[in-house]
Image 1 (cartoon, rainbow, N blue to C red):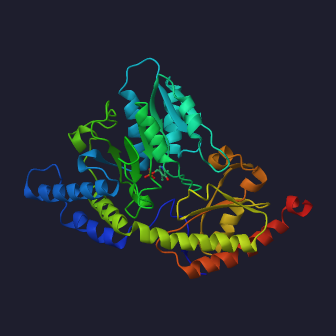
Image 2: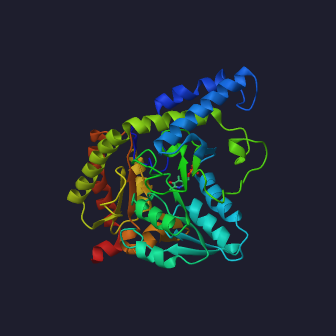
Image 3: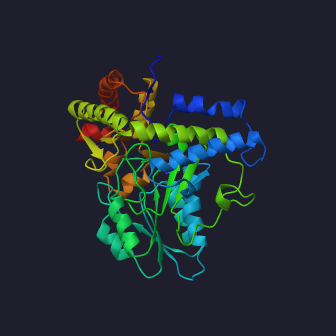
Amino acid sequence: MNKKIYLDYNASGPVLPEAVDAMLPYLTEDYGNPSSIHSMGEVAKVAVENAREKVSTLIGATPDEVIFTSGGSESDNFAIKGFIQSYNEKRIHVITSTVEHSAVLETANFLEASGVEVTFLKVDRYGQIDIDSLEKSIDENTKLITLMYANNETGTIFDIKSIGKLARDRGIAFHTDAVQAVGKIPIDVNRDNIDMLSMSGHKMGAPKGVGALYIKGGLNPKPTPQIYGGHHEFDMRAGTINVPSVVALGKAASIAKDKLIEKGERVRRLRDRLEAGIKERVDHIQINGDIKNRLPNTLNVSFGYVEGESLMVDLDLAGIFVSSGSACASEDISLSHVLEAMDVDPIIGQGALRFSLGDSNTEDDIDYVIETIPQIVKRLRKLSPLYKKQ
Ligand SMILES: *Cc1c(COP(=O)(O)O)cnc(C)c1O
């Protein structure tokens, strides 16, 4: 079987062909160091500054507010750790949520272990936080609120505008991990009162290992640099930047700017077709996430009485690549931290799959998936003692 139906775009995706074309010359011919004074350095520098302009335009920022990094994880670490390190106060309080990506959660855990007070906001069964609870958790030591724009597992989109307004009104800095949102839905850092925003190349059609952090001009204090060395990136992040990948990121950003709505509608139609097809043909399922506020490309479904891992492996054999919502920790299967935070029933939650769509997917692909899943689920359920009992 040579089928290859990739439905795991939230994990990573191909580099857009236009982005590959744009970056290639900087690997082979225009390989100067952007810090060099000679004209080959200048060529690289111009390319980087062009990319900075394009990335900033996509999120409604200005070029001097964008710092290139090695990806989403570095941007999250830089924003959160760096910002808190800029304070000397004895008591510092940070607010985040239980459903963040590990790049934020583990950073928050690290800060907590070093004496910072951290509130991990709970979510409801749709994966949403409650703005009133957020407001109530603020105290006089709260310096930073860090909440993701859109969840990588369920696609649930937080009410970033309300969070941003609340943070701004209370004089608290607001960082958002927007890795899954940038390039998928329109973002405007000024409309949403965002002070810092993380993004990643490989989640939006650029290569792995490149990303950016937006830092609002005038944000005070600024995050403390995490990498010291030369005077790169406005003295905020040392190291010769990955020019080819940054050029590709710029290209991907300008394509997103032009095509985001159109591409979003296309994948939304496919995603809805998949969702409807699964609902029609498989019983004992549950859609996880906030279907009213959800990324257009993401579908998280629990299949009762089967294990997500087994489903995923069987789909893999059929040439369909998805992500399972459960993490197989040795013997016992545990729910993903996101589904657990949403209080999803483990019997149902263990069979969770994430489908995340992108440019390469077609209607035929989706129809093949809709045909294949019921057969696999049926076979797996035959083996389930719990299914027989119900
Ligand atoms: C992928 C992802 C990250 C990490 O980005 P990398 O570039 O892979 O380090 C952070 N946050 C979210 C929400 C993600 O989906």
